[in-house]
Image (tube, rainbow, N blue to C red; front, side):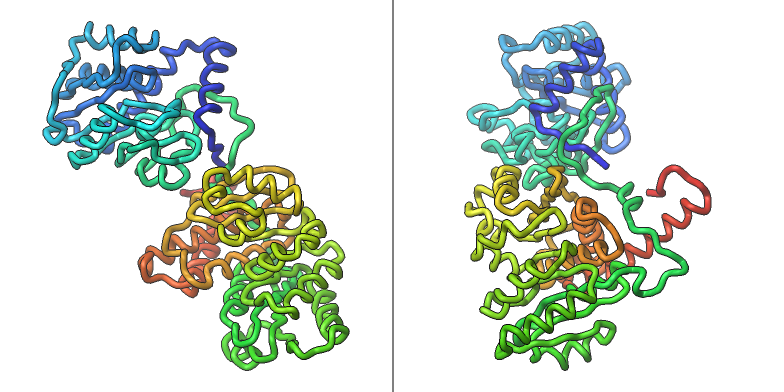
Length: 511
């Protein structure tokens, strides 16, 4: 599991290492430069390299990189874009060292003449938009078409939000130090960063931050009892599909079974009975119609809920009076059973603020940005600019676990831990994709996973299934059915890795 940090957090960690642990700044800088040097040799053409430096410590890193390249016999030019009057103490030392070793320093250059450009202009401390000569410089680097390696973060990307500060360098690769920066994990910063390499330079101590799951997350996958039966692996009730809206019920219920749940029952509108029985015979079916008396509807729902271990509600449900009654009764009758609320259940929850206080830590909400804006009473722009603040606001009204779906999905567990999901692709912005995530989440809960793990793991698993679908069908053409197929393949691969680890006693999972 990775920890993602903001620029301010990184500066605090850097200072703690220098002041508390006693590691000099120049030692850390040399280790950073060596990490960049290694990546340059492995991934870039060094026939002719240009290192572009600012006047701060990011520029000092670049100066050290230029020196290392020069001493290794590579053709390298150093271009100082910063003001010498603004040099940090470390920059003064690196500048003098570069001159002492007779590194080639140029005042003018044609970027297109180089095979590689190293961006060491601005680091994680950037807080203002690039303008004037810096904007012109960055735009010229981008226009050159020369592959760029960014030092720590592409110049012009905000380290905390990922936003472009006026303009930004488009890097082929970014070598970032100690911890991955939040700004190169969020859009659009992640696009500008290219391939991100996180390198250990001797800075440690980040105990708090935003977490991102990686391949080690497979240790969270619920174990399978070889002697188990379908009841062992949990029963999911999926309340989904209003009149003639069977697709959402199909995708979410199938995802729950594919994720490992033992049984799924769909409670849906009578009109969906025939098509669901034909399309998905593995699921059990209970039906209602909108003309039912409230008492009869409550009786049907109570029986289905009594059977289930986990309830999911919302996909394709509509916001009708019947749907509203179903949601209210689910929250009333659930007896602390885990609930996943998606789609129209969230729209109803936004409409019925009085129901939000009935949610607790066993509830998981899965809103996309539009649904979240209605739940939190804010604009989508506010959500994108201040996602954690919006999630905190909603938590105070509705104390549950949140999966806020976007190009980068945010998760806030009920105990206040934040995750950012780094898997997935733009092809997952397709009809039915969210229904699949709802079903995966419910399926994991049914197998005994806690809400605090099921939410981030479901988002991660959904993403790697989508990545598989994109590889097989292409992101432009993939559908929710392809994500389901990818889910089968990825779970099979994860189970094989777990089995190999158990057989060999390995401590690390195969990449």
